[in-house]
Amino acid sequence: MKTKKTSIPRREFLENIGKAVGSSVMIRALVAMGLGSGMSSCGSSSAESPSLQNNSSTESSSSASTGPVSSGSYTSLKSPRPGDWPAGSGAGKSVTILGAGIAGMASAYELLKLGYSISILEATDRTGGRNRTIRSGDTVNELNFSQTCNFDIDSELYFNPGPARIAHHHEFLLGYCREFGVELENFTNDNKAALLHSSSAFGGKPQVAKTVFSDVRGNISELLASAINQNALDETLTSTDKTNILDMLRRYGDLNGGNYKYEGTSRAGFYGQENVGSRDRDIQIATKDLQDLVVDSFPIWRIDFSQGANQQPSMLQPKGGMDKIARAFQTRVSQYLTTEAVVKQIKKTSEGAKVIYEKNGISFEVESDYCICTIPATVLKSIQNDFSSNHQDEINAFQYSIATKIAFQSRRFWEQDHNIYGGISWTNQDITQVWYPSNALGTTNGIIVGAYIWGNSAASVFSNQSIQQRIDSAILQGNNLHSEYQNEVSRGLSVAWRDVPYQLGAYGVSSASTLLTPDDNIIFAGEHLSNLSGWQEGAILSAYHAINEITKKVTA
Ligand SMILES: Cc1cc2nc3c(=O)[nH]c(=O)nc-3n(C[C@H](O)[C@H](O)[C@H](O)COP(=O)(O)OP(=O)(O)OC[C@H]3O[C@@H](n4cnc5c(N)ncnc54)[C@H](O)[C@@H]3O)c2cc1C
Image 1 (cartoon, protein in one colour):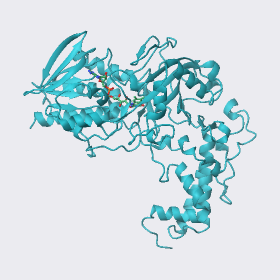
Image 2 (image 1 turned 180 degrees about the vertical axis):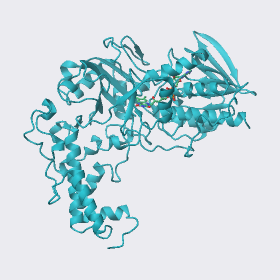
Image 3 (image 1 turned 30 degrees about the vertical axis):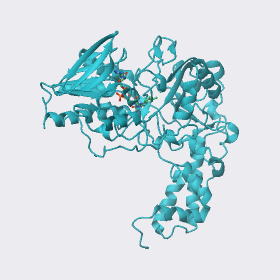
């Protein structure tokens, strides 16, 4: 028995495989798998790493909905949470909360429990902020456009233009759903029957994801098995390790158990099956060579997408639309809420804070001991204030990703003709993603998200277009994935978050620092100030951080 090294330096391990099987193939394959240095673990937030998209993004940091985000001074493993604050500690103290998104309403709800007297000011006529669900008859305003949703009237025909999925470990958001009785259902993020499309690979023909995934696994497994069988890893593996790993590779890649070659797999499906289901099982889909699978554009097919911590199954969605969560919060804080109250000035006072807002053209003033400001930095930077110069500088410099989503009503051709039930198809065209609804499976019509674009480049193209141009481009590009698009999708509706009033962006991508500290009695919150920016859970974490800061002052 050989003495095994306690840890195998990753680089050395990869070099040994590379020597045995040819390093360029190996490196490209590992990059494609998201294991090599060229690939981070981010996907989309609904937004994963904009900076990885080749069709977008010059952003410096990833955010929304994905991999590790720079977290400013949020380094604590255990961030504050309800239960940490002394019961009744808010008695006799007042807090004005600016913004009735998830951060604002979670702050309000928890402060009420602690005995604070609160008031919430919200600029629009609805609560939820980016948490929004659009249904038949709703109006969607952007700075330059207004649209009316003309989906059929049906509780299952809705569009979540912002948040649409919840990771299973977003414990606080899911905890509120449980507490408020918001019913959840599965959200399918990853579907092996969905498509991967690159205009420069396989003649531009979309590939069913299961074929690509199976062939990548098979080919990579064969390579590694080959390295082991050529004794290239003998310095790091014992003979028992080799036997065990070969057995694992045989299963992982569906290799021939005799020679450890990848000779194709039924996992990839059978010709015609993607269109006609399980009837024809005659000819297994031909395997693709690893070299063809890792052509340059391959990584954006996002084979690693659902590996990201925030994108792994299971994922969830509220039944009937994401705004069920906002409505549930609203019910609990509504008596302290003023809508259509546009904050115009935020000022410090000797006692706390003074906020001046306008409603119906009339100016009002509210003074309180503390103020929690959840207004997005994109908007806040233009509001008059007397913040410290460090706070103001960080607000002015705060970067946001922009994003656009486009939805259509259609016959569920993806289910009926292609056996795709939920999930996402990817394309290297600007539309980036096509989302199939996870709700009301098996019914006649559904709302398909025909584009989810984030990152500044492609999203700007769509944001700059007229409503009709966005719809036309989404149909044209969608047609390259599904020829049914041309005739079957209709009633298009788009939301370009860059141009949504009081949002002016999709999610923060800068690292917060000074804004995590109170500016006297003004405390900042919002998804952008959390280590889960681009997620509703981040908005809640930021609310808890703000309450913690107030509690420290109150109990000092
Ligand atoms: C395209 C997209 C996809 C996303 N996908 C997901 C997802 O799948 N899952 C997920 O969990 N999260 C997702 N997110 C992120 C999620 O939506 C946010 O993290 C969260 O909703 C932000 O909440 P918030 O309270 O911090 O901010 P907001 O929701 O922006 O709330 C701020 C509030 O302040 C108000 N306001 C602004 N200006 C003023 C003013 N002058 N006076 C008074 N009020 C004002 C606004 O109207 C708004 O209501 C997505 C976001 C986008 C844009």
